[in-house]
Image (cartoon, rainbow, N blue to C red; front, side):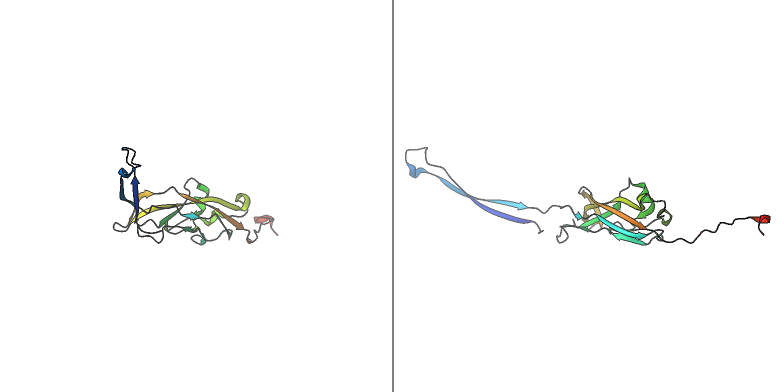
Length: 178
């Protein structure tokens, strides 16, 4: 990527002189055409990823990071700011996980009680992390409305089974016990 640049092309136009009987009457002219190339916001790239964590990992514990790469990261236009969020339509994933800082793709545990190996179907969560690429206005320190379509990272969080303490069930109660 580069900053805006100009391209100059010299164009020469010549007629064939057929307007008169004399071929030496051919006319030509030369002009310079200027083309201004403007850098535009290019979409980021992001890979699908899988994380493995123990069941019941504590609240606010780190799960993994979704990493987006922005081809505009070296330009001067403010296109290089990415924003991450869990697909809001996935209520199961949003109940279990969160992204605290939208400028980073760090996924953490929101509610550890949702991470029970024995009750989670397939012992894993599958959801999308959406990566949004918006132009950043450094003078106002805000994002503009100039955003590209969200790029999707398909995330799988696999749970490992952890040994739980045994549950003691009394075989008698009260006066029935010796």
